[in-house]
Image (tube, rainbow, N blue to C red; front, side, top):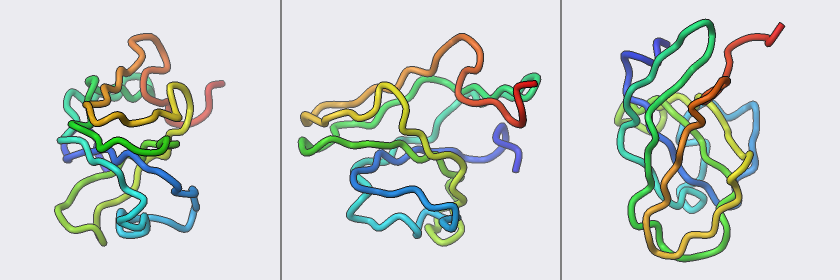
Length: 119
């Protein structure tokens, strides 16, 4: 998959437990998906470092803390929308208050993530 030529979105999750057996969006129960972003732009891959534009989850309903963001390739069909990355590092968890949640991607390396080993 070339992340620079497909539609990538992110889903904000509450109560979802990562499993290596999960491969598509339909493996994350609908009730665990709190909000889905619009298509994320400006994906680049340079020297195995993946970067993208900052993005947001619009008007996230208030509720308990969300522990993770899952990035996925959106095909328009949940059973073929491939999961790409599970992210649960800072600033996670985040507690929605009914407003947008903005996600800022670090401008310094490793940006969003690094492919392969660091060595």
